[in-house]
Length: 339
Image (cartoon, rainbow, N blue to C red):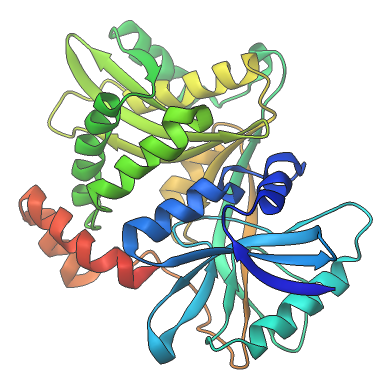
């Protein structure tokens, strides 16, 4: 087996990402390339080959500079496991990747998935991942009583959800997303990141914006990514200054019902930190299964023991009290270094 750092748009890697049964939206070349182009990183596919055939691979973004360079698969991504063709020995694939990483002039590779144990493979707890199996019949969805009540409240209050892919709908989402990030005391990613997301994934049909409105006011909006019958709830935003009409509940419910009707088998509700009890309860109350999420660092030295969201302390308090532009400005500085 030979391991190559292939261009992220290599047709052979694209074919694997397009057709592999375990591939999701984050395996698509467009996702890694938009991250790289937004933050001036290098994106490539680490491919395992025999001759011209790609047996396995994973998308990678190189972050940092000089002696601090490292590889991540992938930044701003909850989970992204290597893709291995059926019949290929996984142990040999992981051994080949490990040897390539240790020989490369980087600090290591962070794989956002659990890999089998190895001398240079260090597992790191990363919280929990939440997935909801979507039945063919939406009537088989089983949210708990509280979620059903909130969904029904939103309908009675005239909330309606529409889906679209236009730059205008993305702009509306970004305004609401910025307000939400500020409320949580966390910087927001630059507008250009979401513009690239709209151009490269949403507009071509690999995602959409769901917008909830009532009485002429836009209450909330979410960004979803789609690929290979998997639906990913990636971002959400709402306006805290408007009356609470449970619009976010209706956006989630609409995605589930339409996901069933459109043939998706899984709704990925994303990652939660271990101490995010409220968020974990919210997701499980829709009927989602919760599973521990482990990342694997391939490096000569052991990485930090855990991961945090970084949404606390003095910085968070400043962001909550500052104008919106401060949240955006800090995002310009923060996310390139946080990848």
